[in-house]
Image (tube, rainbow over all chains, first blue to last red; front, top):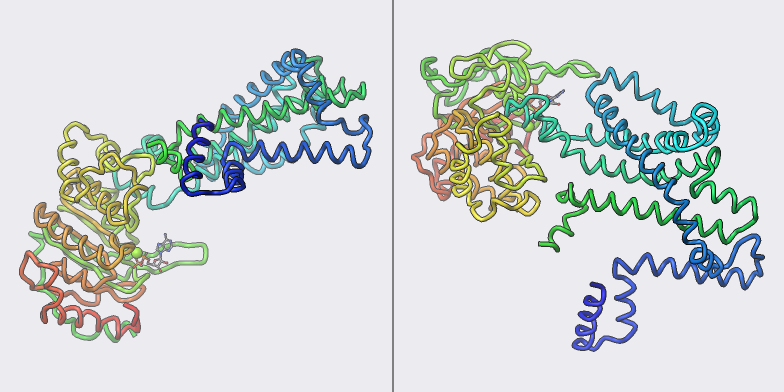
Length: 283
Length: 276
Ligand SMILES: Nc1ncnc2c1ncn2[C@@H]1O[C@H](COP(=O)(O)OP(=O)(O)O)[C@@H](O)[C@H]1O
Ligand SMILES: [Mg+2]
């Protein structure tokens, strides 16, 4: 795909007699290449900084050492990322399954909102990291405390975004539904819910990245498996390259999950302003 | 100031409409909104009868309660006092045989033009198969043939509003209520839409209540033009528009037409609403 696009550009370049720098500039500004290019720049800067300032490897490892560690320890990293992924997905699923219905309740009634919302905000300001050890005491070592921390971190953005999305509907749209003598359920299914979908997805996308953080925090305090556990071991051994490698795998997991959600959103909400360009190009 | 004008003999008041032929009757209706900062008196007692098949336009300065009046007739809000009835039935909730065109097209962006028109049918729980032809015919009349599968955001402002008119008519209501439907359109598109609306109305003979802030639009389209005073709104005058139909757009240049618009505009000069 990228190659085809590149070929296209070259033809254009030849006909319009553009210089090599122009080609480079065009490739550099293409959507897929942009983030990779930035990463490359950061890696080079990182390597240069280490060399120039003589930073010892026990403080910051050289990028190549990290890459080497990723390659060497790949089976380990992969194996340990599975429990983390599992805890993340469970926590995220709980966030969506509990967060969205709670948001529906809050958005549907002022009374429920006035009771529930302040409590939720209050609970959100309790530092999850601080109470995570408590979950180990309550639920023991293993999967459950991780899932709970991932859920607690992930559920709040789902609720906030969904409530906001459900509430920010035009009064005229509701008048329209009422003028069509539609009942509350039909209005909800046909108008309110589809209208709120982009907002709900916004919340879900924040939620899934936070669920990754939650799962790792859970692993810090009470687990003998997962990337979080690996991070602690590496930290204890001053094995900085392994630590950075684990961090890399963790970020990739977050990015991947985010992308998957983004793709699902593209399928379910192709009509939203932010997606219309894709639709047009696809057509 | 309003009182002084109310006391003045009402110009060109139409002959009292016989209740027998009244399709919509508004009797001593008032509306007071309760807000956090107190009461907002939106409508002073309004009495108005609209005949079956009549095209009635309402003009008045911004904030005089035109939209409020339309919402009352649509059953979307309830009167503080007085009664409204359509076809002899008191309006307490949105009635069956009414279609509304709002100021904005309010089309659902996730539905195609045809699906948006058919929304009226689905939301009312009617059988879509029975109305598919009607929808297609309306879309054709509105010049939207070929755009049935387009999404609202692929249409121009005029096309969107035409789609919303189709939606208001697809269930074949007896009453069509329109709240400044062409307010957001440019002058050229607006005139075209006026001509089209006249044609659609001539074909279907609905009872129409059109709210507008354009005096030429009101005179061009309506059988009668109701002039409202500024808030709290009440009826200041009613003009019978005695121009032969069908009216070509060129009627706007004729002396009789201009006389109507000038007479109506005088009310707003008197109220100090020079911008209208
Ligand atoms: N829902 C509402 N709550 C409080 N006041 C309202 C509401 N709707 C309209 N009003 C007030 O009633 C008056 C008439 O409004 P409206 O009917 O929208 O006027 P128009 O359509 O003629 O511009 C305005 O002063 C407006 O502020
Ligand atoms: Mg209005």
